[in-house]
Amino acid sequence: MELLPLVFATGWASGVNASVTVVVLGLLGRFADVDPVPAAFQRTDVLIVMAVLAAIELVVDKFCPWDSLLDVVGTLARPVAGGFIGALIGSSYGTGSAIGMGVVGVVAALLTHLVKMAFRLATTRPSQPAGTIALSVAEDVAVVVAVTCAFLVPGVTAVVAAALVVLGAATSFVLRGRIKDSLQRLRHLARRTQQLRPPKKPPLVERIRRGRRG
Image 1 (tube, rainbow, N blue to C red):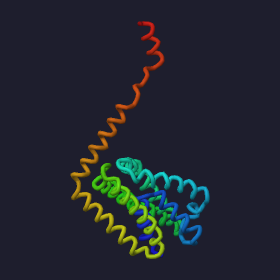
Image 2: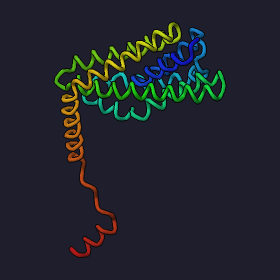
Image 3: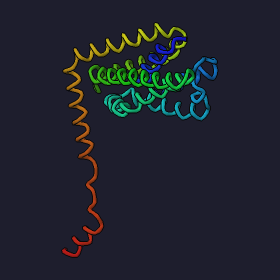
Image 4: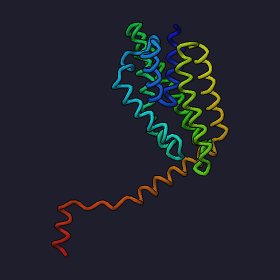
């Protein structure tokens, strides 16, 4: 099996949805006896935890602007997951392969995540919930298909994944004006959330001093 395209494809999937990627990997390794799925992903406790995280992400990702806020959180988590998956897959071939495949996984997941985040900002709007849901479902299906096909036709899957990254990046560049509008909307939402927070109480010592002066 071609290790590099396999890791790139799983890294791409991690950049879209890391928790679903781990769940699909675990299920393939446990019930389809697919090699080289890391044994850690096939454990029952890992599958349960990741399935819960995947369910939460699958729901939140269907609503704008929460999908973009979820992407912000995933800026660190998704590349780390891609690197971790790549390193575990590569570890079967030695330490050097583990390090190299870990780097490939990080790069693939990071590029995919950045393109996904930009593409979402450019194409989803709170006033168009159907479009957000349809795009999110398409991404979920793409992750399952990509992880499965990565073990069947790794080279083809990696090429398609790379093409999607390039296409998504080009589309996001063309729609960069819409991305700026979405970022402004998110900043406005953050300011409104900050204004709705109750004012902080002064420290106890300060409250006592104020009471004495009163």
